[in-house]
Length: 212
Image (cartoon, rainbow, N blue to C red; front, top):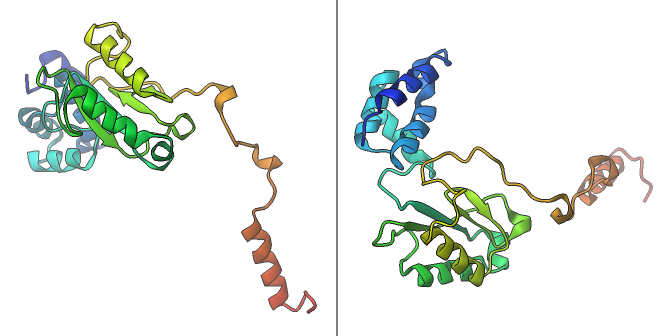
């Protein structure tokens, strides 16, 4: 499939009508096309360009700027393993290496059966739950090698039904239980940072208000 289905074209026109300029709907329509096909096909981008009144090159240029838009087919399950600093320090790179061995592919590749695509990614905003990964942008936290293997096994067997095929927008935010949140205090309970106090002292010294 490539161009919008009749149903999705009607939805696309409804989305466009929400904006003062049609081209402002380009990104929402890219999401819609990716939900339909799992990636952004060339024909889909041409269809979007026709609907919003810009060139197909402009649609492609917009889509290629954002990592979450895929311009070629990916697996049914897109697995993102975070290797940014918090996850890296707590085993993210080791988890990625294990994922490559477990799936038999390198990061950036798709398994031969078309089921899994593996990617290493930058921060996914789950630093307190490192090492973390996502499947189709649904979160899995503090993942061990064993837990990763169990997750893959469940996905292969179709036992993780709450994860839709790739392309479906994740419409819920990462949720962390209150008891798991660490090192957070309310602003009114925080003292001035050291650099702020030092700045005040330096300013006072310049004005002759601090004796030597």
